[in-house]
Image (tube, rainbow, N blue to C red; front, side, top):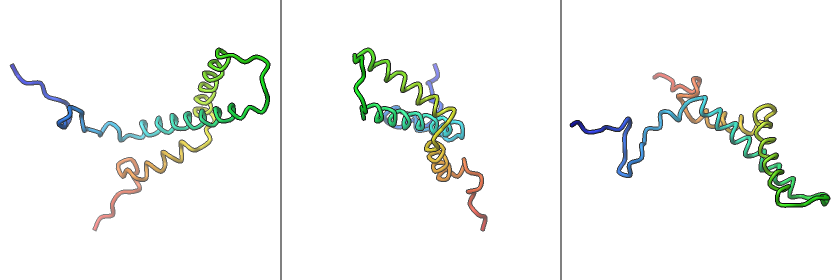
Amino acid sequence: MSPITAPGPIDAGGISTDTSRLKSNDNLDKAGKKFEAVFTGMMLKSMRQAKLSDSLFESKALDTFTEMQDARVAQTMAEHTPLGIGKAMTDFLAKSQSDLNPGAAEPSP
């Protein structure tokens, strides 16, 4: 019987240290969109907490529905009309990864 081998390097804790799949423009763009959605969601939540007026109907069910609606609105805003914070983050991270940024290649001696 042959031993089972792992697909990438494994440290003593049994967690793979192979991070090559993480370095792609697609993953970076997805992370930027998710970050944009989280940021927009936090902004909407903060605006809701300001309570400029009292509502006529207050209940836990209405609060839960409003939170779900805000999460969906934030996700839609991040996909269709982004604020730009996610793109700024992905641009910043892409500059630090030379394999994702073709213009950042090291000059030859």
